[in-house]
Image 1: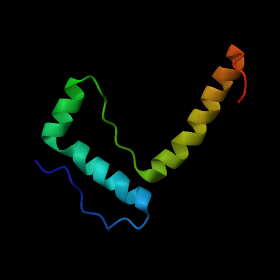
Image 2: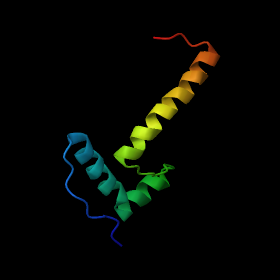
Image 3: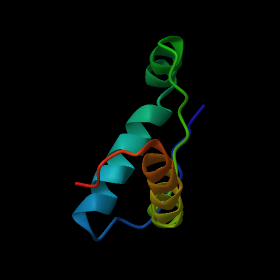
Length: 72
């Protein structure tokens, strides 16, 4: 079973790195080994991550402030 979806080549080095890692994690033997160690593989696109990161930062900033953690 092939999990690789043909896409145009990435133009940004970060996109290329993301594509290489995603392709590696999609290989059935790699996926099986990683999930056997308890990891959850959830590959997001770079656009999805651009949306998730600010929301996660805001969420955890609230937690840090509520805990009294000093701002560095």
